[in-house]
Image 1: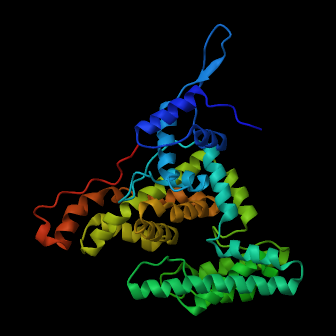
Image 2: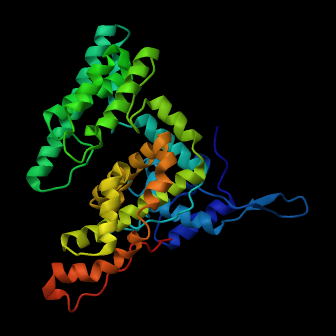
Image 3: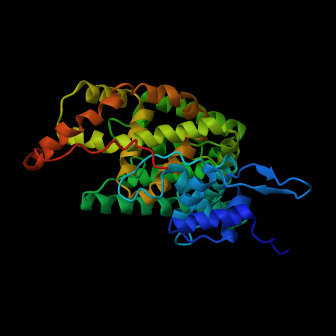
Length: 389
């Protein structure tokens, strides 16, 4: 069925974007509207039986400009929405948290698409391999283990290359072949069911990996709880998964049930942690001794979840702003699809206050110590928390 011609509001918005050097057709604007990514103003009656017309609201122009910037290279609309939801496309050099008012409908559709298309998690990769293997149990087991080992071997190869280049690696990546084996076993058991492997086998495979002293996995209490959960899952035939690594359908269901306000709050807090990652890193590199830094390190050391959030934020802060959504969105989904993580999230991050607010004030001292020759002429950098509209 052919589309109707452009409305007056669509023509007006297209012209408005053109004045900002953004060439966007009315057809693309309509696709954004139909997807739910573009807010639209109320209709205004024309009077005397002449019908009504839509007017371009201020929020509509803001979102349309952001989407136009994010889709200049024929990017999928879902990817553009997720990018705009996390960082403004005009931020080319540094991550700046923004509050572009993308409608809930568009954000939820984009998040659901991401979960369904996700290839970043081992569980998603194993699920697809098992589906392709058919119904034969042996073939499904072989496919699950092969896909899981291939996934984590690839991650381990990247870790080793990053170490050689002096780069950063994700705290959740394998750092040894024992890690590869342990995580692969857990991913396969998540998809096929822990009863296929046995609770003891799954837990022991993890015990042999992640053996660093600061890992939450090595704590005896954590292992006791995990073993109890694994045994229960084996007994009742339930699924077992670490937070954020559940089966695709279950993750999609949990994400859909999360209140949109809570989802946006988690996004906002994670974005703030990313903003603070650079000044926090510089202050630490400069060896500053400050109560705020000591407080943050105490919280990090005492709470594995905060340790994980700060590590992830630091990793994200190294990425170009246009790519940060690719790391921030999986972190957001992992928090929002884990009932335990979501319930404790506010308390976890609140423990960082008010020390986090003091970190920006340490920037001049950190920069002066790191670059003494230019400290006399260096100006204090602008706070990253400036919102871009």
